[in-house]
Length: 339
Image 1: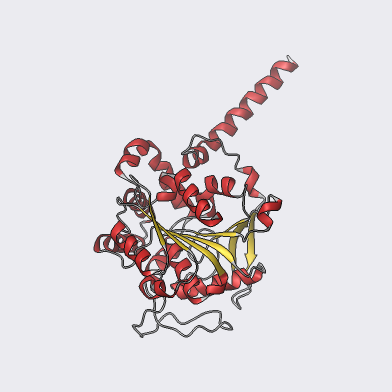
Image 2: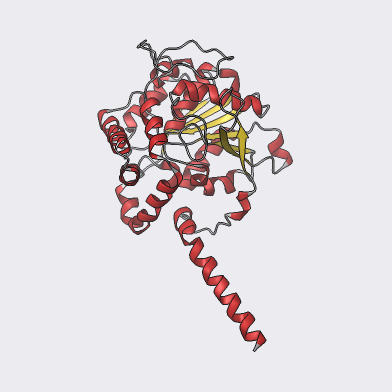
């Protein structure tokens, strides 16, 4: 009888654990690989941002450290996330890339659990935050990867602080955003201004993935939406989307922690089109012809304006290239960074 009770308790525990993990597994396992989420929990740290803000304001990040003697000789890889993305979004990439390189992923203002004031979300503020973040980690130079919004921040960092970037890889960033992409982003802002985060999440996904991917994985999309809603805040995301698409001209002051984003000057010093020509590090630009947010023509134009940049195409995917074809995206990026 005692053995039966032990067996029954074990069965109940296993069932509960399986049910509570269904959401995580269905969200992350595109490549049919099991993922032990607990193995990364101890690496989720909060960086107390010494930016003369309120004492309780922090920038959340993950730092995997060095896993091999070889990786110690290489600069760390820093990934800057796209709109509405969090550290957990990159779980499949974290577990793979960190085998070979030290990997650092911060959540910028307006993203995830970072508590830095989202009222200051213009690109130049993100650039300033990033430079101080690297300083806190005692990093003099990194290999910088940026996707979508994160790619625009990465481009600005490389243009204004060239000594900080060893190599630059950018995915899904247009030179000048076409009308369709602009209207889609404006629709997100309108939804968020009315508190419709769930509707915005649906639009993010349906405009981000290719028709083929949606057809194949449509049953998982409600779960994807839940993950976005649980990881984001309507007001923070609204501030991020609206302010990061403004690039006022400013005078960078490394002693200043908050820069006035209400400048009336129309000279867009931190726009992609003005930063591109000033990038001097080896640069990789990745795009897709099915991208509705950043058309391939506009991505190609960006590559043409960055001296020496290489352009690479991932076929049959939408805007969310790192998640539709994660293996191919990683191979392209890691091959470039290791060359």
